[in-house]
Amino acid sequence: MTAHETTSGYNVRLLVSCPDKKGLIAAISSFIAMHDGNILSADQYVSDAGRFFMRLEIEGEGFGLEREEFAGAFAPLARRQGMRWRVSHTDAPRKMAILVSRYDHCLIDLLWRWDAGELAAEIPLVVSNHPDLALRAEVYGIPYHHMPVTKANKAEQEAAVLELLAEHEVDLVVLARYMQVLTPAFVGAYPDRIVNIHHSFLPAFVGADPYQRAHERGVKVIGATAHYVTEDLDAGPIIHQDVSHVTHRDTVEDLVRLGRDIERRVLARAVRWHLEDRILVDGNRTVVFE
Image (cartoon, rainbow, N blue to C red; front, side):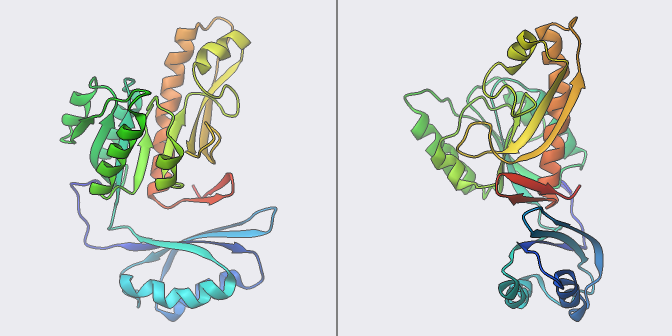
């Protein structure tokens, strides 16, 4: 659902992680059944470290718990089982801000998918450290904020961006080729809620100019990686990756062209999975229920 669409019904999404033990699925299912809930989908996974992960989608119509009642009702079960959990509702789309520099391919793709109804979010603003892409956002009626950044004003610029995001109650920040390294203060404001696209198949070619370095290395596969941003450069939990085969005949320009196509689809999938509550972070890894 996009910002300009509405729906009369809704579903409830529940994400859970906790130490694995017998009876967890039965306990959660029984809780839902006890409140007349109809489970539409359920996915679960147990990691090698013995941690249990689950994603449930529950039909909103007929469910015996109003949205403001769910947390209080579920909390006792969660405490007994040592759960980390969160709940969301499909008729309350998140607010997503896009940060971009001069490369437009990821921005254009995200805005097109949003307008086509593929991304269930509101996009209240696009922020850029360059003025170049203003028309790309404004054609969709989305305000574009040009906020230049230099080494001298980086702290002030980031503080201003964070203030703007808070003003618009932004839930998710997407770096659509935003060519700036975020400070720990910025990252700390949105833990596991900043999605970045890196134009390389991480952990290979971290940092700048990965296509040039890939060409020099003579790689036969190039890729792109969508990940959550942490304080460590390009080292956050990986959400999605994809690759394309290349040959010795491909120039750096060929790699860039092929890579941009990979970047678009990898970032779009990662953003959609986040918006649909399909990702649980497990340390520096993710569990993704596609």
